[in-house]
Amino acid sequence: MAAGGSDGEATDGSGPKTPEDADEPGTDGQSEKQKKQRSFWKELPVLIGVALVLALVIKSFVVQAFYIPSESMENTLLVGDRVLVNKIVYHTRDIKRGDVVVFSGLDSWDPEVDVAEPSNPVSKVFHAIGSTFGVVPGEKDYIKRVIGVPGDRVKCCDAQGRITVNGVPLDEKSYLYTDPETRERNKPSDIPFDVTVGKGQLWVMGDHRELSYDSRNHRGDPGGGTIPTNRVIGRAFVLVWPLNRMDTLPIPKTFDQPALNKATAAALPAALGLAGAVPLTLIRRRLRT
Image: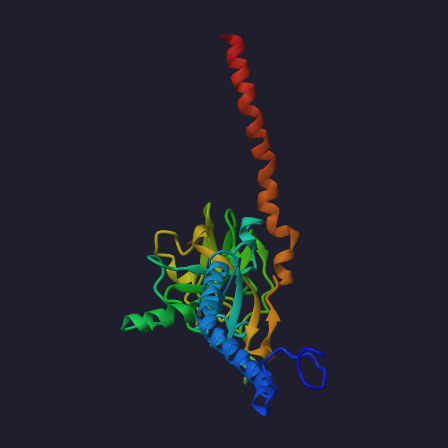
């Protein structure tokens, strides 16, 4: 006699399957889906936290977004634009004339735009996050174009009304503000000046010269209007918002003139001669002794 059921089929003793049993696989699938959903919502705060930490690390060391709060860089940058700032570029090369830089004016320049400070801790947290992603303006951050680097003599103006660097006139037509209605372009400067940029300093100006409160207006400050290079946060290299204005921020061609470096080139032989004279003098003294 065959063991098991009457028809000879092997059974596990659990009895025949019912319609309810047939629905169990679907029930298990639905339960698994619910578990995954619960798991996702549990992990979401962790994912957000990790994203914020990564954003802060990137902001601190690599790239940071900045919000443009004023009209001082028009037409290059408009109020409400967002730019990305490279924070490591000046660890690999010097700041160049024509660079658009973001720098801190803390304890130095007064802000061009008054930014209301958050009134409560929650607002401060959201303001800090917004500043990180370039959604709100920083309280003491400025954005200007570098016109003169250490050792440069920057002067306004020559007989044609142009700013000169080391005696070489700049052709600023490509970036100076132009009124969209009248098509009139700003003059390079209505304020005369003649400044030699000191070591570790920069002479900076906005592209909208009639509205920009820049080095020209701070000549009575300790730096004579210049800013310290160690206050530079980084170079603005691309405009990312709004999307219809997305563009790079290259150095204008006028700053590529080889003659701009003639002062440095002229001083080089003298510097080399001095460097060679010092050891020779010491050797002569030693021989006499």
